[in-house]
Length: 574
Ligand code: J2J
Image (cartoon, rainbow, N blue to C red; front, side, top):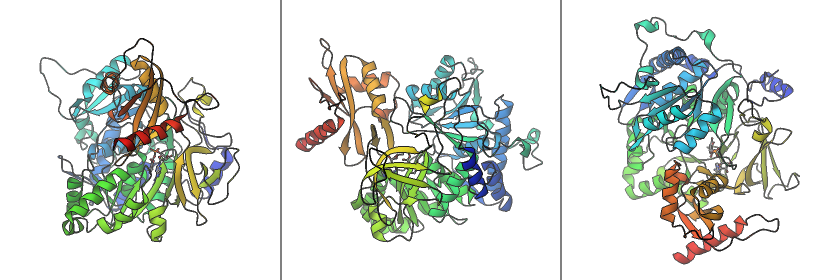
């Protein structure tokens, strides 16, 4: 049976038995699986940091460092199952720290470098994080100072792990809570029993049904929820997505999207390529000049992009012509997902980049659909693919939960061996509050409106969730509205997606100002969001001040009308 863990909704016992018996769940923690590969090929390069650090780690070095770091995390006083908020850019340190968590059982909570006080406070309190890992300063932002602010305000947050030499002022000794992440991730020293490869006793390894990572939902409610992924289910996620892109030992995967996202982390991403014995190359940005040069110098074979990035790569390659084809010679597949890739761009990927396009329609809550590399062009350029695993269950239903025939749009419901049955609920809080989006019989309703074709491939038609998808970054409309109310001076606020040629969608806010309050400007609203410590990608990029908002028959703000309104306004403005 499936032991229930604090805050975790288990799969029903009979289902768990079935998944184990079928071999979908192998019963081994991820750290074991990664060590197995390291033992087989210790001297090959496993991780390349192609950023300024230019670090290369062999499989043995990677595993040894991960184990040494795992022990140091435990020596700090962290226990297995404690949560560590990880907010690091793509680099070797992200990989080693994540593996250290998988080895020690400390649970990483995957935050984004773009997150600010508003998001980090929520994530740290929701997960009751005992530690946070940040860069000292990144892109001009002082993450270390913010982390200390959080530690001052949040009782559970005891340890701040900082990457990069901060300005050391000898007169001002560093905060006792602060630890140098560089030292924590260093190779084992003599004291660390370097004589043996493994510096974490295998007996310490977490159970296979323990929580491996907590991912952030692109949810639609006020604040994001945490998604529990166990070792068993995440390992399956890695294997199934690796198989779908035919990933093997000769592959070199380039990770340029923020690695805390499920897509570049595990679909198959950085962890998947390590699991199959290939190589992961880390870059902190998908900017094409640098990315193309890295693809050439490292012989990258597979990478992943959101549509906005894929478009930049296609445009850049088209501009460069022959030179780009030479640089991208080794690139055999480009995965594109996170938001809808327009069909006309899909058709340009192979001609411009020379790589086969794999559309990926996935979600951190589990289910991953992909086109396959040998699919006909029509499937690759006009569909978002089909489930990667035989045990994935997908239903397409109408408003009364009745299955609709193929070819008819409906809401997507899914269950399966790597799709959890509920969100994480913090101890002491009512689990029902975190049961949104899951039906009583365990189906996850993604909020996407899809059409299933007779050949089984899904086409994403739209969605019936109140979310804005800004180039793959998910923004809850309700969260933005709450922030607008906090900014003050408005009676009513509605956040909606406005169409954008580059990012697909951006955030537009409609407000009805309160009587007597001056009409707010977009600049004022943006400044208020910055003051509230909100991640920049959520900041409204257009403001419409109106006397009233259209209402639907049931007395809710008619967002469909607002989306149509802003689309018309943008067209006229052109
Ligand atoms: C349209 N909408 C898409 C696509 C995701 C791989 C790829 C993506 C994600 C991801 C992921 C889409 N076309 N190709 O975790 O492992 C929208 C849907 C979906 C939501 C999930 C992965 N690919 N979407 O994007 O958890 O609305 O995961 O329900 O961030 O993104 O968002 P997220």
